[in-house]
Length: 106
Image (cartoon, rainbow, N blue to C red; front, side, top):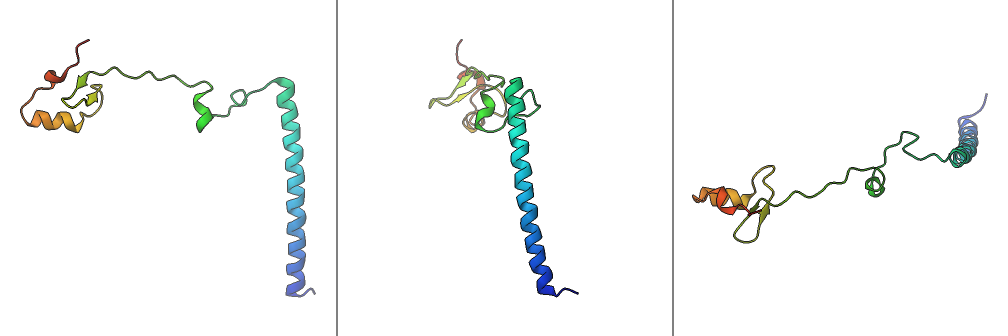
């Protein structure tokens, strides 16, 4: 029967062999995949991948256009009229001012 230290040494050799086999198979899979992609001119979208990060907006993203300014405050603050009213407007309304006073003319 093998000793504890001998079994640990065998395990280390086996783990090293496993990792080498894994790396070799990964390299082969990557090479075959690149070849197929090049042969067929495939893109990440064709393969069902969703892009994330910096390059995501470049491909097929919906272009957002800024919303026009609807209200302008006395110190140049702006608000589109969407979402929660900004603090500058709510504080002015608390002082008795009307929101319509700050409408930007079209």
